[in-house]
Image (cartoon, rainbow, N blue to C red; front, side):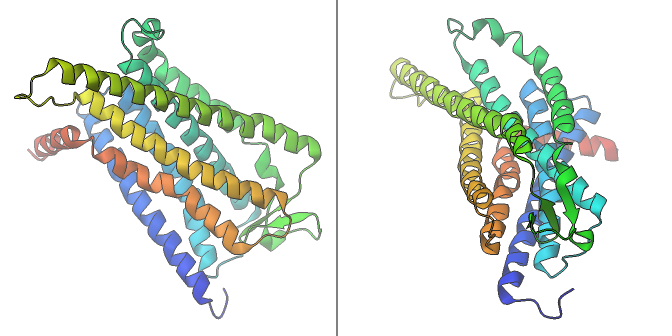
Length: 310
């Protein structure tokens, strides 16, 4: 550990610590709600199953990126073994990949759910919930297999090889990959992430249009005396739109900074730290965006807890 920590490192460490702690508390609290409901045989919707996996994916991102970055900022730079470096990168990539996929799945599923019966999604409205669990499980397995390639290039700084063809990330370093490996990475991760992001934007735009048309019809039907209240499905859709919009914003910023880091070999540390802070923003904020739709579930949880005490 360094004898003296710079004030900038101290500030960065406190930011990582705060972001990670708040995110872990939020995600674990939401996961705790789901576990209580599951143990008390509360019937969860398909949307709740998707959210449960999103919580797990975001927790993996926070634990595998937030904790090491906090320790690095406070002066610990040689605390990981070679295996630990590979495991942390592997866990982070799996969590990040699943977070992107599940957020996209949530957006598309909600779009199908609120679509009218005469839309092109009418055949999927009844069948979609049956395939949610299988689709998520398949993607967990797929991303676990695919992401096992790239941690091979990560090395602990404690046992780092003497070569100029490597990149330093503070607590770990990576040997630059071959051109073929870069192409494989682009094909397996960059292109699918772009497709999923575009699909999220398209799905969100469709939901906004559906909500607008629904609001116009409701205003036409209701009289001035009775102010129309939005349906539970409309409120859930609005919250999902906020969630997806938050994800797209932070993911776009993080991708642009990551592209800058990848193109230039001379790494500027504050740029890398800023990118890591931004990459943790969505996992930190998302549980609090979702908690607003848990009022009924929270009341049900309190009832379940009282029953357990009895």
